[in-house]
Image (tube, rainbow, N blue to C red; front, side, top):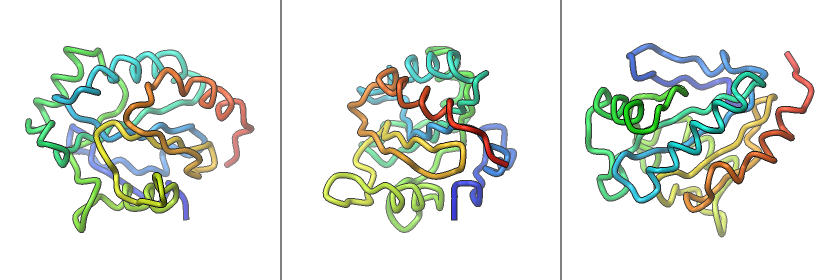
Length: 164
């Protein structure tokens, strides 16, 4: 199993098959609009602008499970991200990342790369997962890790040979 078996719903209501991302490096992030880490949207957008043409996709998944820090409707969230941070990377409809209703993608991510002490639970907004060109989850980063500090690892993964 790899990341390409999953799908999610984009902000516009369209289904996104993750098989469409084959051969890309992915940075998957659970986001929130009213969190102390919300300014990370700027660094995520900076990474996207710098590396998108080289094969990076950043995928944002709003979540309201942490202190109700993303209470808005999907359209409000999308407008907030675009107007305040210039977000142009793909954003998906709001999901749960923990519990029995967690999106299957996040169930998979947390199983593949558990957190500290083997915890599968997402601890807070802006937990980040890095996926290589072959669809394997290679790293998990805590919310405190700023996106731009991931540039070196992203560059290394972008340098890997693409496979079909």
